Length: 236
Image (cartoon, rainbow, N blue to C red; front, side, top):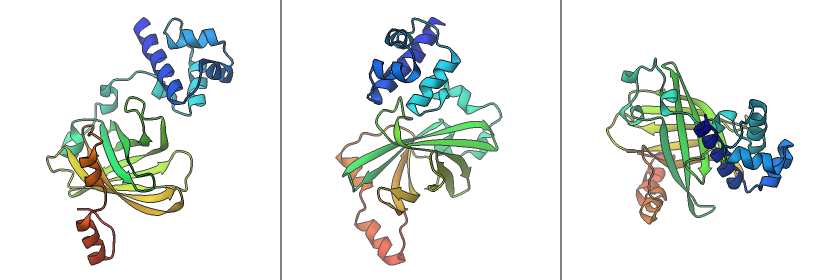
């Protein structure tokens, strides 16, 4: 139990710092003393469910994100692995990258696949994250489901905070034995609000955010050739 409390406390501390909140800030918002919050973070005292819910509300995340979980809990017992493409079969996390020309930077995101049932492949996507250990501290959070077909995988999403944004992701050739796949994100850009399609790279492993990756993500001459030829934006 002591180790469990330390893990929960460590999560609270790191998320608080990612949120740029002080101990005083968090203590004031949940109506606890600074000393009590410090003891929560150090795993020195038990933290009740109501307080944990209050903290998750302050952080604007799900309470489950504060509770240590194993990958096995996400994989499920009834999943039909024969129906899952190779690209998605070996794990519950997919890393995605795209280049944002507005900020001239690589944007990294994380997709979590929660396979409770073979027919209920629920998905969470955390877009524009800064820390892979705490992906739910992000610019946008989406929920949805994933569907696998012979030549393509579709991920249907809805923004956690607004039904206005319901993007979908199409990933090509998911049955190909490769650690990276190209896909197209199609939805609404918030800054400014406008329809948008994004060339996005998906990976089963964390990629180095270097100039080589940036070069791959930026629209190249081949991309522009296909856009002019078909008069539409697509990825291959």
